[in-house]
Image (tube, rainbow, N blue to C red; front, side):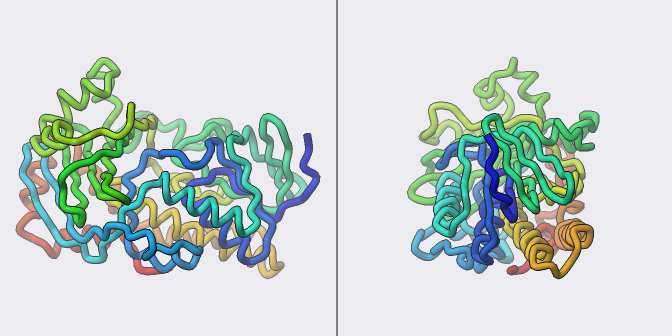
Length: 379
C-alpha cells in the first residue's frame, strides 16, 4: 500500500527526541508522520533523570511538570567498587520521571497537535531520491520532504546502512549491556546515586509515585562470565559493592523481569546520514553516568527543528540545513561527549575507580567542573 500524501517531515523513532521534534513541527503547522516500533506506553532502558536545563523546554511543549509533582534531585552520591562513598550537591539538579510516563504524555500531546503516529510499526528503510524521502514499512510506503532518524542506540537501519560505529571492533566504548528495573526502596528522594562495580555502574533515582528507577550499564564480558545470567551477575559482581548488595537485597522489584538492551556503543556517530537528520541517541550518546542523555535528546530536537523549519520555509537549502544542523549539534554537545568518554575511562576498572574517587573527594570544585562540562544551560 502507498500513502500518497507527501508529508513535510517523517520521523523514525518515537522516543524523547522524535516526540519533542514532532510536537515543535506540528505547532509550526507542518505535516508530520512518526513511526514507533512499540506501542505506547512502554518501558525503555534509561536512567530516568532529566537535568533542570530542560524544564522550560518541556513546559513549552505542553507538559505541565508542576502538576506532575515530580521529585527534584539535588544531591549526587557516587560510590567506588570498594564501597567508599562521596556525596556532592548538584549545581543545577534535575527531576526524576519514568520513560513509561513521559513518552506517553508527549505522545498524547503530539497526537492532539495533529502528528500522525504509527505505533507498532517498524521501518525497514529510508531512501532519498529526487529530493524526497521514501520510508518503507512492512505494510506501507510513505513520502516526505525531510526525514529524521530518532531510532535510539542501535537499530536495523543503522545495520542496513552500515554506519561506521556498527563496524567498530570491541573496545572500552562499545559492547555494553543496559538493564533497568522499577523498585520500591528506602532512599532520600532528592538523591541520585551512582554505585560502581567491576566493569560497570548502577544508578538509582526516585521517579513518580513511590517508585525508584534502578538501572545499570555493564560490559558484555560481565554477562558472559556469569553464564549469560543477569541474576548471577547481580549476585556475584554487582553485589561486591556493599551499597548495591543492600539495594538488591532490600528492594521490592516491580517487574517480573528487567528491561534489557545490548550492544550499546559510545563511539562517535555522524549527525547526518543519507540526508537523514539524526537526533537523540542516533546522533551520539553520552555515557549514562553523566546523567544528561535525556536533556541532550530534547535539546537536539530543538536544534533539528530550527534547521528543518528554515528549510521548509524556503529560507535555506537542504545542503545548508544539513551542514548547520551538524555544526550546531557538535557545538552544543561535542565537549560533553568528549568529557563523558574521559569520565567513562575512569570507571569500570576497580582499582582506577577507587583511586579516582579518592582523588576528587577533597576537591568539590573539580566535581562541579566535571558535572558542568557534561551539562548545558537552559534552552
